[in-house]
Image 1 (cartoon, rainbow, N blue to C red):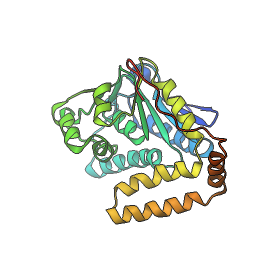
Image 2 (cartoon, one colour):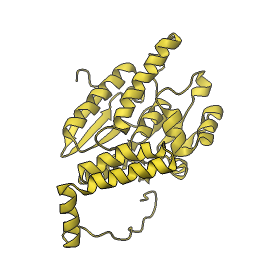
Image 3 (cartoon, rainbow, N blue to C red):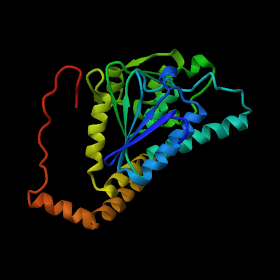
Length: 266
């Protein structure tokens, strides 16, 4: 993959994809996003789940403004749509992704995190959308993904006022699903991704691809697609074997959640 702006390691069934520009707080330039695309395509062919993280102290400080150039409106449109295609491949591709978040999760970095399916943050993570102060607008899908996760009103507040959310505030807002102790986000993300990789691949695919589309549909259309996916997934030999294992008490039973304390929550 050439110059390692993005690292890739296949750990069992989990692809570990790391943004590797720590000196630039993992800012996202075109070369980084292209390497991210290559890593995501590779993971689609050989992994059953993925983890996206940032090397160093930060996940990503967003768009690399040093690389930002003045574009015509048409050029800007195509540039934004290129980012959309790559982030869509994460959100609605063949495998689920977990994002491990620490330090800056800003602008395009927050848009990238929003494309993952599960987000884990340690106490150092902070979230911001400074586009209003920069004289620009989000272009990596944030107006769709982030707004649906935290509400359009909260996103507008962040963009208009420059409000910064802590990890705890991001969890309360619905952007983050898990909080960990300091420095533990990546390990937790790996554990979750390993658990996800153990699911039936067709069920994971249905969750990743059908669930967000159902949110875009009317009530009746959503229920119809749900019925189609339910019928499609339950007729496979793997589903039959997993259900038989449960009935024969050969699979793990669901237990109450363990009590949590401190910064870690599940």
